[in-house]
Image 1 (tube, one colour):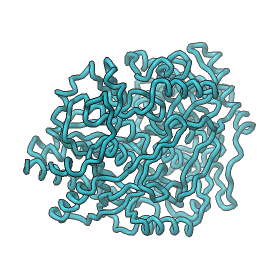
Image 2 (image 1 turned 180 degrees about the vertical axis):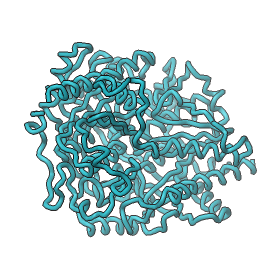
Image 3 (image 1 turned 180 degrees about the horizontal axis):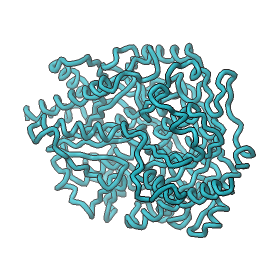
Image 4 (image 1 turned 90 degrees about the vertical axis):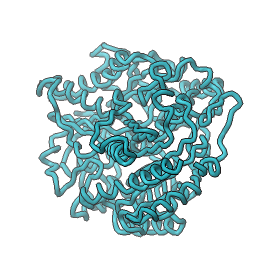
Length: 311
Length: 311
């Protein structure tokens, strides 16, 4: 997979830690590493045997969606049937769900940057302990669109913050650290090419606004509190659109920043459930929303199968 | 319940919206309100009939813990047995879980401020649509301790940010808004008195540090990335302790800010799973951690029963 070598971000390195993805000199001094939120550990589980062959990691907010994705991949890759009961590897905790078929690992991450950050820290350590290499990561999710038809799939060019800058700001011991959120342009283009080959739904490249709140943080008028006007909201959404933003969600900045920090090529592929220029409430039928939510899965599944077939 | 009238924070008000807890003039103009993440709505559900009698709302990160809490309350309040299968009101979505017995509503909120904020916006609207009044809210959770024995229950005096200030900062349309996170001092003292009557485990009043990350954001040395030293970490934790911080978690600032904004009296009651001055990994046995996690439930349950008996 040329994209990984060609396009991987320059990763942080330390002289002590040799693993490809982590950057923490303290890890190699630990006798045991408990991945608490996965209910996995280096002493209690044979992580290389369990995960050593992982090449594709797909993460998404909803545990049900990740289960349905792995069942779909099971059949799509000819490994089993789509109704097979695939066990949740994190069954002893309800924080995250994790499923695996062949080289594909699927993990839920809940809602928001803090929730996905925990999962990503433990995932990066897991890949390291399991001695994985040449892994590609995807976030498949749902989002609100800006000026696009509901059901459109947006492949993220840059994940931007509420000021439309491509950075993730994190407070570490009282000091704000800033991490770039630029994603692999090569992988995004590959995904766009896949969508053209698939030709099943509208797919575009666009910037993704990542917020820390769904209501006020996304200028909605239907939260419990609202101290701005429809005009304020529309001005903000139009400014976002002018900055290249085509959808809004709540995790891409953390996903992109951790991909960049670890050198893991990553893509964010989210479907839009509504056009925020037309309204705030998600009022489409369950059936319509359910079909929309399968689109990122279909696209990422197509990419994975194609890569496996050209190996 | 005198505490509510005596100690409720001054709430934001609008001339249009009459409901006790919300502050959004647009809500009364909507024909329907879909509480998307609860899979509930004003047209599809009779919210006053379903929730009108709610007087105590208890929220916590883990869906399993909230189910176990509601089963415990079912028996403790003499409404049924602790093994009764109480249905998840949000069963059609996997974003949050919601359970109700008598006047007690329990809802899971996932991990982190963004995740709990969505739940709280929809909860506040739910209480409004259901015409609830005189409600008291609790967050029951787990946390890392600072200089306290693992298993200690901390009732939050003030929820503070990484700079140890009692505020929640939220970006709304590119502008940072700051909301106070001061909790009801009267309710906190009442909870402390209850713990003395109970006399089952150590309970203290202390400040709670609310972070947006579990690893670097809490100065852990065991994340996928670490660019600071043990000394940096210990200096920060000691500075936190000096600022009155006794535990660290990831949701109290949002809970406290929304309680203050809505006028809902609220308390944060979290058990500490480890002492961060001694280490970073949560390595106690499943049984020990499980017993610890029941402590906030026991304390809040005791308070609720006491209030119901003195009505």
